[in-house]
Image 1: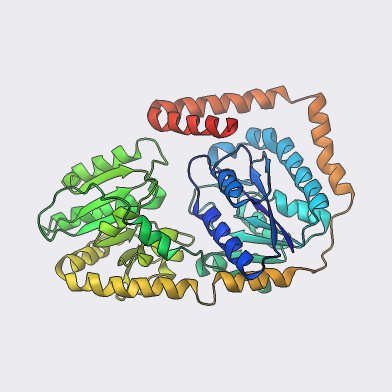
Image 2 (image 1 turned 45 degrees about the horizontal axis):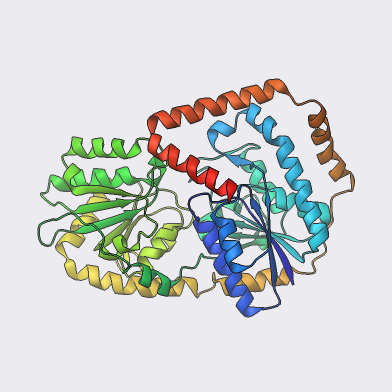
Length: 456
């Protein structure tokens, strides 16, 4: 059985949850069916995804492309036009690979790029889609064709669509037939997390005895909601309750850590927060905590929430998105309304005053994590669904589709639109210069990582 997986990211400096979830699913699939032959298309240039594929011995091809869900600065018509030829060429290259590989199924991983799905339609091969994010609501991406048209096309191009939570399924349901929709929860490796959590002793600031220690893992950005935790500390300071909070995660927005520190100083709680930056292994900080928080108001699933639970930590999360279905209120943690800062403060105060609940909720949290990944939304159920798709007959696109995709590429080789190119490159220079001015260390780190992966 041959399956072609199309991934949206090269992961130049960070292997994301979507890739880790997919690799785990394939590992379990191979255990179930050793005859499975996985092959990958992944975005160029070379990154951590390729390193992982090479370690596992899975064949791959790197293809340069962008997506139909892009950062706001790439949604400008000039950028869309600039990348159109590249994306057409990517679709044709994937179609040629399908012709050669003859897969029984094509699987696209995440919502960002549709080129594998289009290529499968050209070749008449069944296609399944793994949707692991909202795209716009959680990551701030822009659908270049609009949300409704894009999500509708996901259903049109697929014989099955897998959401990573009930929340994402419900988000897709208005646009995709119910019979096509399934749910598969990401899986985390409990034994690996346990080992990772003891690799080193984290640098935790000294605090008075019985101070509640809180860990928040996630890249620093307004959408991740770290500001809610800062504001809750301000509420608690008025009650003379002073937890210590460790924020683990890289900057997604230049100077946002400084904004959070300024917010904490204004509330008089800056001595209660510490930012330790991105950590290759954040789990010792989780293990050291009494309680963990997922403050994001719109998580598609909440992989970090599941990791907290797996390590036996009570979790306070927002009652929205995927995290809301992972937490059992007052059993494995607490759920609070998204912008109810007083409620968040109340739950932290509860754990500060009722230390026995930390142990009680933590024990139930670990069992809850096990139940979540072994129930009806397990990888096993998803694999059975995927295997049932093999052999389905689907109408392929007419032969003219390849010609339509090839035409602008051929024209572009003879006459590249100079105005569009200049506008696009000018916009890129401005954006990169602005980012470097605001965050020179982070920009240099990302650029060095990108150059390194290109030359490895």
